[in-house]
Amino acid sequence: MKNNVTLLLLLFSLSTFAQENFKRTLILMGSRFDITVVASNEKEGNEYIDSAIFEIARIEKLISSWDVNSETSLINKLSGIQPIKVDKELFDLIERSIAISTLTNGAFDISYASMDRIWKYDGSMREMPSEEKISNSIKKVGYKNIIIDKEAQTVFLKLKGMKIGFGAIGKGYAADKAKALLIEKGAKAGIINASGDLNAWGKQANGKDWMVAITNPLNKNKVFSWLPINDSAIVTSGNYEKFVSFNGIRYSHIIDPRTGYPSTGIISTSIMTSNAELADAISTSVFVMGVETGLDFINQLKGVDCIIIDEQNKIHTSNNIKLNNTN
Image (cartoon, rainbow, N blue to C red):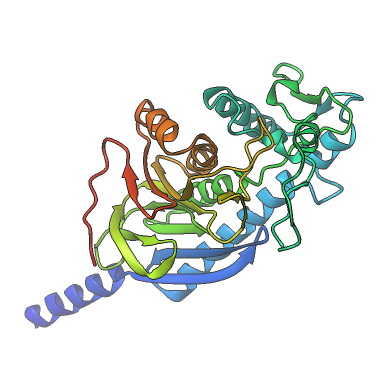
């Protein structure tokens, strides 16, 4: 009888702590999100995933420049007119964005939204825009014209018609916030993948690390390397699908907000650091900086690493990266 009781207790214990991976894929913030959590049962897994979805939807409403009722839209609408008092969360995100702009010497800039859309990637461009058009396209761009008052918690865009947008940082921020909420709710492990902006914590249900494939941008079926991630973020961006070519030079859809000219030389970057928000912003910056300057920049940052694939399909890595190549 005693042995039977012990066996029943053991079986109960095993069933109690049995874990599974639960995943859902959906469109949020106009992009694909893959949300995976480790949970004891389907009900718990769905509750975690639903919580993440609500949090991402909340972030989208907060930072959206398309929602006419958002504080971001109001900031843009009253540019050059008056400062706007905003929610502390939005104020803090803008303050951090300005700090990243300073760190990258303007290669990252949320006021890129002010840029005139003179570069077309739909096949309609037959010649490069003139230097004058390119110069004029960025006249309202410049993070130094985003004036924030910490005490009053206000944001003011100095130039009339100036705008801010979070396309280069928003999905990473949403991934970070969803992860933080799920940890708070007791989720021991999971992975939030916002179209390449990825943040993970804990381990899979089978006890193994979450793995991310670094693929050949020109051949998605070929994997250069697998990287384990645990309690960290990795953001992979590519510009190999949206580009135009003039005089033998390929110009991508990622445009330098300082010059108005598209980035050249890089087709993919993967940035690894502690949070997806920072990785998202830095990934864009490295595209703008180019391979040599980008690598030098990353190697000066503590806790940030990168993998760059150039237009010749050559891999470049920051100092602390050791790839396990695979065929």
